[in-house]
Length: 288
Ligand SMILES: C[S@@+](CC[C@H](N)C(=O)[O-])C[C@H]1O[C@@H](n2cnc3c(N)ncnc32)[C@H](O)[C@@H]1O
Image (cartoon, rainbow, N blue to C red; front, side):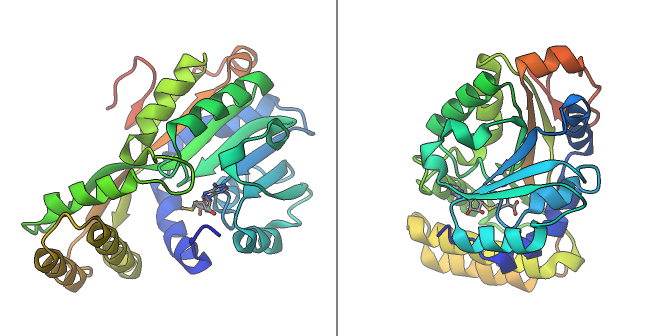
């Protein structure tokens, strides 16, 4: 079990989808233009299938392989997407702690969202090796980058975010987690393996319509920080209450990176040298 609830994943999905970097989403879809019909999109850490929904309708008719270790989430993904617009779908219950080559058989594109901040450097290295071997590209969206900024300040914001980021680096079942470093580490490792890597910013933006998600995020942060025991509990509780009281009045931005790593062979056949657009960094290119 992963501990991720369907309710939480459903709540964040609209915010996730509007946060995605549109330029990178488009370039990821372009990669499929030249992929044979019997090639797969493999969504690792699929949850209930949010990435599939984020790429619809453009991926209608494609073959999907949904991979997760949590049987409840995989069952939910299967209920929602067993049949989809003429495409085929497979559902594999597998632990990414043990990445196997057959996970990626006939893969054209491997996708993930909100996964790599939970992952270790060893997993990213192993994945890059496997994807290079099978010539598949990676489109990894929504990797938390460690930046949380509210429109109205609380004196403890910086301390809480720093302690939360430390918590994010703890082991989540896949070894020491990359946490806020996941985007840059994906970039570095996949470049080392010869991929052409681009990064784009994909911040969550909570407004007054997202008060429920915002409140759950604050509660989750406070719980995680409480576990670290590095902050005065009274200060943390004051922060939590004060932030919760303002979810309707204060906006919040939570930074993420989307990463597209184009496999060397794919790059040659697609000649994808797109102009990615705003908020984009890639290889030697610097972030806007
Ligand atoms: C934050 S959720 C994101 C789910 C989905 N991609 C989305 O965007 O809604 C992280 C997902 O990674 C999966 N996951 C975590 N550790 C895993 C592991 N060791 N092997 C396979 N899946 C894992 C969880 O079960 C969960 O579905």
